[in-house]
Image 1 (tube, rainbow, N blue to C red):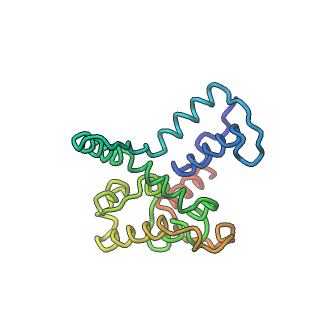
Image 2 (image 1 turned 90 degrees about the vertical axis):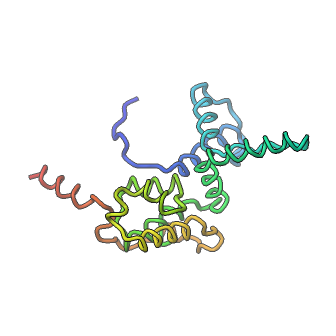
Image 3 (image 1 turned 30 degrees about the vertical axis):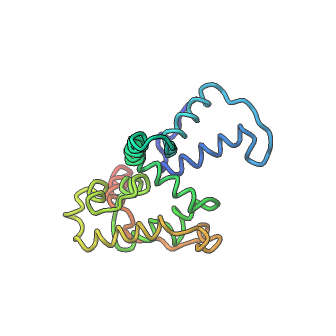
Length: 204
């Protein structure tokens, strides 16, 4: 196998989980074809390990002694904290079960909601999808030099827009908006203009 274009596109954890679950369903015959078939050994391990890593761990249940219940509750809380991004992915799949691309394309996408007023780069958009920052402190870890690039009220507004997009129920989004043609946004990505200038210089 020869890789022609290495890293030609970026995928969020959410997009990766959707793809892997579709692959799993195809081999299990639960994709509507009802044609189950064995998975190659290497693919089987990749699917199981990656889906397990990206999916939230089930919370343990018990009705034994109060001490044991307290210990289990503490363990469950720790597991939930550790699986924060995974829990977030599961929520995205629940709120966007049929049309997940509305999160990435069209007027209801994160890019279209943020780009007109805030210039972020591709890696920052990707991390927002993956980590779902909920506080300004968490947003500081995602956006490079956020306190220099944005005012405090702007960071609050960015968080509000992130919540607006990621919490929106699929049922409230008009059908087909993710496929509609939309006008380009000038200077849409931080660093895009530099990349174009560098490319132009190389051509000269």
